[in-house]
Each structure stands twice: as C-alpha cells, then as structure tokens.
Length: 259
Image (cartoon, rainbow, N blue to C red):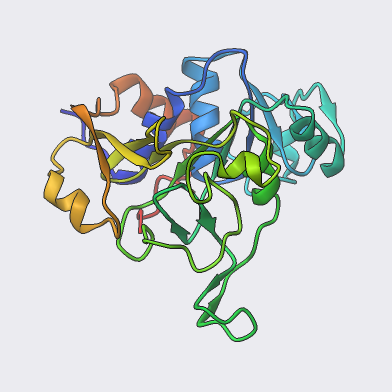
C-alpha cells in the first residue's frame, strides 16, 4: 500500500467527485489542489473559476491566492468578482468547495465567530468572503475539513454559510434556490453525504484504518448511517504521483497537517 497523509487522502478523494465539463468555484488550498488533480487526471474539461475573476484557466502550479497570476494562465476570461458572483446567481456553478471552523448536522458552516456574543466573541474568525454566496447559490457544496468534536458541533455558533438550515424545506423557505445545498463532506476520517428525507449528515464511507468508534468520538452529533457503509478507496499511485510532482511539488498544501 502507498504511504500517504491525511491531506493527500482528502484531496485525492475530492478530485474524483468532479465530472468532466462541470463548472466549479474554488479557493486556494486543498480545494484548489483537488480541482487541479481532477483537471489533470479525470476531468480535462473541468471549468475552474476563482472568486477574484479568473474563468477556466489551465492550472500548472499551485496558486497561493485567488488573485495569484497563476490562476489566470490560459483562462478564457479574466474578469471581476462581480462576474463570478453573477455566474452563481444565474445557476451556472455546479460545485463549490468550502470550509469553516464549525459544521453541524445540516451542513451549516461557521467561519465568523466562536462564542455566543457577536460583539465580544471568544474567537473572531475571517468571516464569509464569498462563502455565503457560494453555499447559497451553487448547485452542490463540497466541504473539505478535518473531523473533530470542536468542528463537528450540534449547533454552529453563527451561520456564515447556510446548509440545509433546520432541515427539509428550510432553504427554500429562506428564499434560496431549490435543489441546491450541501453535497459531500470529506474529512480525514470519512466521506459524508446527506440523507434525502431528513437533510441530515450521513456516513457513506470510512477511510482505511479508521473505526466507526473513532468517527463517532470525533462528531458532536448523531450521524445517520447508510445501510451499507463502504471503505474509501485509498489514493491511487497515479494520483499521488501527480499530486506530489505536478500539483503541489513545493508541498504548500500536502505538507500541512490536517488539524
């Protein structure tokens, strides 16, 4: 078996989810690495967009920000943030990648504050950026995040990005487009989806070497279980070679610990 770390595992698993020809909005970090890997191996016609305005570039090396000139190489258009947000509003973005400090059973994300007092929080986080727009308007939202009790909580301290809010019908009642919302959560322990009937988070597959007890211990709410829980396919040799040699040879992302 190939040796790999948690970050490499999450990136490889995420890259397999992106269909050829789909349009995806990404930020830097692990989501960008996953999109690059998909473009190189599985989805050569993947249309990648960046919040700062680049549309459909060919990514050769890892950019360090959404405004990095490397996000614009051979792009079909280099425009503005407002144009990217308009793509979302017009329903043209199939996938977005997001993260956050907290996530709950309905996929609501918090990247604003830790604590109950907005004015005087325990920790003030960076805030939304484009995350609210992406999670509100993209057809499918994929989250890449380490799994721990402090991240996977019963109720987020602040809803920065709406998931399914309080459950079935809540997104639509809030005025968000129907049939949009959380799709997958990829962690260092498992792949999670959402139950169609309840919109609650659902365990789909367990990563190699991980136990169900470990997953439960690192989740602050009760996970629903698929009738048949799979074992995640580990990173393939070609995925790891491409990721390490072409996508992130400087180990800007894969050299980080997933915490």
